[in-house]
Length: 249
Image (cartoon, one colour):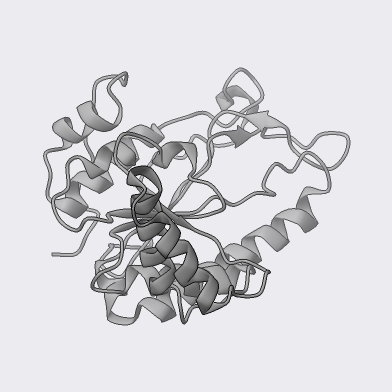
């Protein structure tokens, strides 16, 4: 996603990570912002002014401090809650601003369900539902121009293990949300969970690469050439068979 920023023209602060640190997929040569709600009380205004004065002649720290203060200003009236609904409201508040970032990225933990999967996955999916609902509500009309991609870096086994969970597997699922999308569809061929159809006899068979999905969605969303997007985002990737028709015209 950091390399995507090199293809987009526009605002100075193009991307933000809603996290304590910038996720790996958003790191790169283009500077991005980060913000995470803190449980600590807000610092006194006098202290902030003193730090600003302290850094004003420091070539390295002045730019970093100024950038941090700009992000803090955007979040001045945001919720400090860390629950999924609170994070959805916080993220929507950033993205809905005229001077806000164009891309936001969040990481969500707790999906590695090796044991007790039914209860744990129910809580995780309920939290995801609350996040998406809060994000949509906060964005308002901006939701019509927003695309949300929910994905994971690895899948699960097709069979339950001895502790009522699943282990690391191959294929998984990605979900797209957004006001302009043609929703209610499955874009890949469902390979079934029959033993003969499993990958290596244990995993869901992959039928569509996540890199192909990301490339195709990004290209159509921003009006870019998909083959150029592929070369920039996934330079080591295989040949691209671009998908299209994600959005209503």
